[in-house]
Length: 111
Image (cartoon, rainbow, N blue to C red; front, side):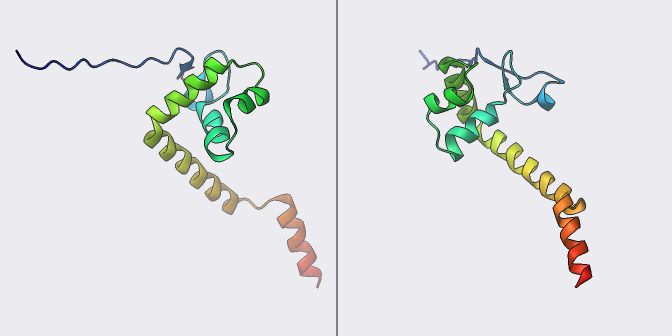
């Protein structure tokens, strides 16, 4: 008899993707909080789940852990989306100077 491997489809009860909600990015259901918002706090800012809960008191720990689980199961895809969004932001910043940059430019022109 052949070895049968069982493939389970992982479900994330608190994470959804909907057109028109945050550009289709994965969010915690019933909120506009993106999975990436939770992942950034955990991974980059090194917040614990309890610290994330303090920042988002309308969430539950179950929602936070589900968001982190989703992030790590889709890490490559989500990291690419994050990098792409940062690159787009840099392009926008290069095209549009901030009010401060414009004012500083005027001051430099005076001297």
